[in-house]
Image (cartoon, rainbow, N blue to C red):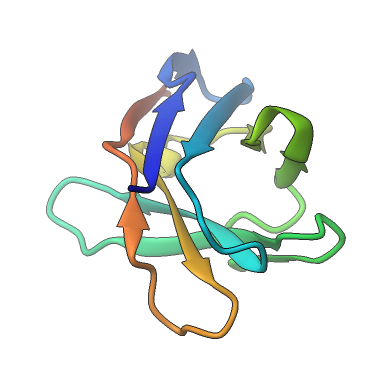
Length: 119
């Protein structure tokens, strides 16, 4: 069974940085997409970005482009979300998720980690 565990959330001042980690285990498919999503209070969950299994291709939402970077360490089965120049509107619960590359929906999700950016 696929399991995803996020860590690294916390409280940071505006302009600061945080790095989230997502460790995956139990994955049986080799060609996959690792995604990051977030959900702010009272809002729907939104896409932040994703990285292909090879680690060479990333895609980002316009709201985080140029500030957030996704990377992957396959040896550690860990995906990272480096968040720089954080803004109060980045406050949310952040989730990682994984899907086989041939599927359009994410089947497996982590439990989420809270990120709070103070002004």
